[in-house]
Image (cartoon, rainbow, N blue to C red; front, side, top):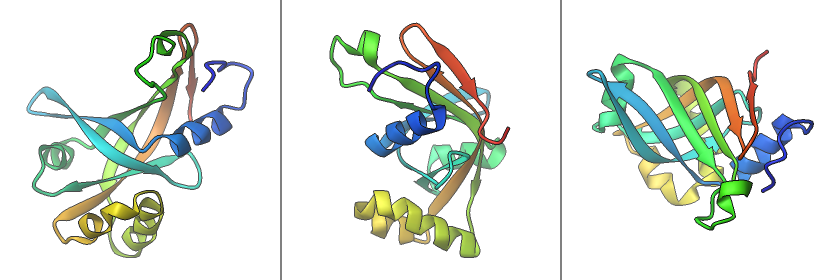
Length: 152
C-alpha cells in the first residue's frame, strides 16, 4: 500500500486498508495503566465506526466498563525493510460500547462477514460485540501525517 496520503481520497484509503487487514491493536486503560490487545476487527459500511468482539471475562472488557475511551491501530506492515518507507499506520480514537438487541444482530452479521471462523465465539453469551464510534483517524506514512474526522 502506498504512503501517498495527502491529495488522495482518505475515505477510500481507509476502506482499502481495512479490507486488507483482519487484526488491529486495541488500547484500553484501567487502574491508570494502558493495556494493549490484538483483536480481530471489522469496519461498518461507513468509516465512522469499527467493531471487535471480546469475552466479558477479559481485562479489556473490564477496562471498557470503567472507561470506554479506546485507540485502535491498524497498519499495512509486512515486516520487511520497505515498511519503513511504505507502510501506513492508522490510529482510530473514540469510544467503545457493547452492542445489544437488534443492533447487535445487525452488527454481528457485518463482523462475521469478515470473520466467519469466529461465529461460535461471537454467538456465545459470554462474548460482547463492541462498536467503536470513531472521533478521529490519524493516518501516518513515513513522512506524512493527516487527521480525519469521519463525522465532520
